[in-house]
Amino acid sequence: MAYERSLYATVEQEYEDIRRHNQEDLEARREAVYLAVPDIEAIDREIQSAGLSIVSLAVSSAADTPQKLAALRDKQTALLARRKELLMRNGFASDELSMRYMCEDCQDTGTRGTKPCECYRRRLIMKAFEKSNLSQQLRNQSFKTFDFSLYSQEADPRYGVSPYTAIRNIVGVCMDFIAEFDKTDKNLLFWGESGLGKTFLSTCIAKELIKKGYSVIYETTYQIVSLLEDYKFKRGDDMAALKAQAQRLYECDLLILDDLGAEFSTAYTNAALFDILNSRLITNKKTIINTNLDMKALADRYSERVISRIMGSYQSLQFIGEDLRLKTSVNPFN
Image 1 (spheres, one colour):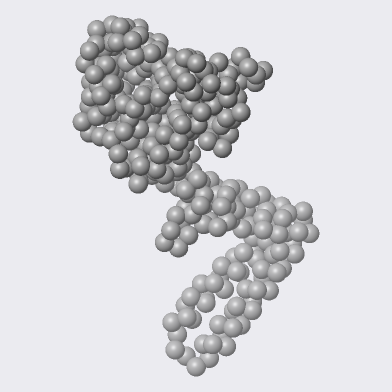
Image 2: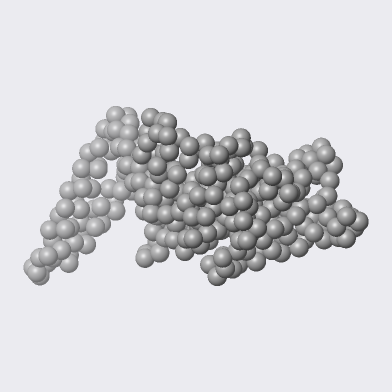
C-alpha cells in the first residue's frame, strides 16, 4: 500500500532542503578555515589541480600513464595528510572540510542502492502521522501500552460480561480490522460512556494502518461538519486548501469520526453526515465512529438515513465499565 503522492513530494523536498543546508554548512566552514589558515586554501587548490590531472590522464594511452597517475595519487594523499595536520593544529576537527550528513547510511539522499533508506521510511511515516491530525497522540498510544488491568474483571449484571472481557473482545476485533483492512467492507462504531478507551483504541488502529502505508484522518464530528460547511458556503480565504481538505475526508483510506453527538444538530449537520458516510460506503472507504451516545440517543438526534447507514454497515462495539480517568491520578488515555 502506498502513501498519498503529496507525502512523497513533501519528503523529497525535505531531503533536497537537507542537502542544500549541508552544502551551505560546508561552504561556511570552509570559509572560516581559509580565513584562519590561508595555507589550507592553497593546499585545497593543489588537491583540486591534482584531481583534474588524474581525470585527464585516465583517458591517456601513453606508456608512462600508470606511473604518472600513481605519482599524482601519492601527491593527493600527502596533501590531504598535511591538510588534516594543519586543521587539527589550529583547533579544527579533522573532518572540518568534509560534508556532514544527518544520515551517514544514505548521505541524505533517502536511498541506499535501489531501496529507500530507513531514515526515509521513518520520515514518511512521521509525515503521515502529522497529516492524520494524530501526531501527538501517536507518540505514546499503541496496543502495547493499552492497559487491560484498568478494567474490572467483575461481571456487570446488565451485560452478563465483565468490562475486562468486553475490552479484550473489542481489541480482538480491532486487530482483525487491521489485519483484514483490504479484504473486508467492515466499519466500526465504538460507543459507551466517556473515559473507556474509545479514542485510544481508534488511535492505536490509526497508528498501525499508517505504518502500513494507509492514509488516515482523525477529526471530531464538529470539525468535519464545520470544514464541509465552510467549503460549501465558501467561507475562507483559501478555497483551494478547503477543497483539498474536504476531498481528503472522502478519499482517505480510514476516517476516524470522533465524538459523534457533541456537535450542533442542524439540518445541514444531518445532510453532511449522510453524504460523507454514504459516499465512503459506496467507495468502500473505511470509517470508525466514536460516540458517547447509545443507539436510541443517536436515533433521536440524527435522520433515519444516517442511522440506517450506521446500523446497516457498522459493527457496533459497546465499551462498558467505569470512567478510567476517575480511577487513576494519571489519565490513561493521554
